[in-house]
Length: 139
Ligand code: SF4
Image (cartoon, rainbow, N blue to C red):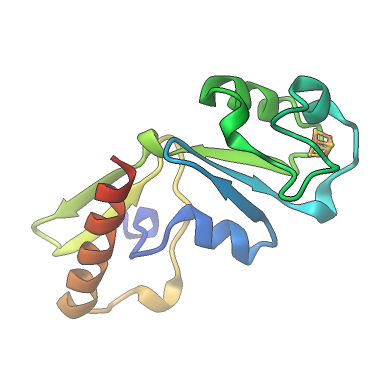
């Protein structure tokens, strides 16, 4: 397990919001949308206009369809303005030997903040507390 694959108390949500994505979430899925990337192809609206309604605020309502359907529609977004993260795919791991907490979101890692490298057990414990409470919240 490489250090660069470890996230300390940083979720993908934070990471995406730093990149200009807006977040819409429920217990099962986090949907990210970056307005500046949207080419207004309407694929999402045509996929399910109860979930994706550009005339409503907020324009994405995740209660209007099941998670699989929402994910399948987002996969069709041609500009990649829409992304999602399945919460059930996130695992929280504590590495005993390194005294480090890590959150894995399935296939890929969201990256590491270089400024976190080299920090000691105090940050690890704070990160673990944060991640455990977050993990419980998504169960
Ligand atoms: S499918 Fe993607 S590019 Fe098309 S309108 Fe929806 S968010 Fe915008």
